[in-house]
Length: 118
Image 1 (cartoon, rainbow, N blue to C red):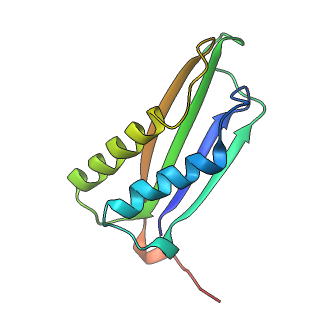
Image 2 (tube, rainbow, N blue to C red; image 1 turned 120 degrees about the vertical axis):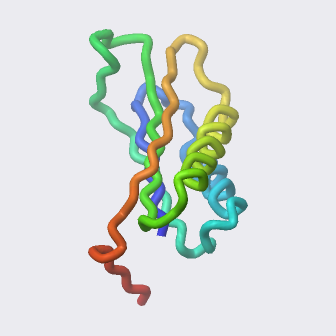
């Protein structure tokens, strides 16, 4: 735990997804909340997307961090803010697109989560 998912509109063709995952993982590691091997991250380009009712000129990156329930709201807010700050400076965002960046933290019920390491 945690699971970090970066979903992004496919019109962000120059997004350095691998480097972005490393940057976001570093944020999580430096938070002191997680051990390195527990962080699972992935980036998912979305070829079919729509922002509002305008088909052109918009893009987005949505970071979802799913973690076991029980952390204080202040800790979750700080993680969200730190991930967003890292996301904002992660690359040169294209000036020709209005890019929306957002971070969402999701609690996973501890009682129903199962994990095995082989």
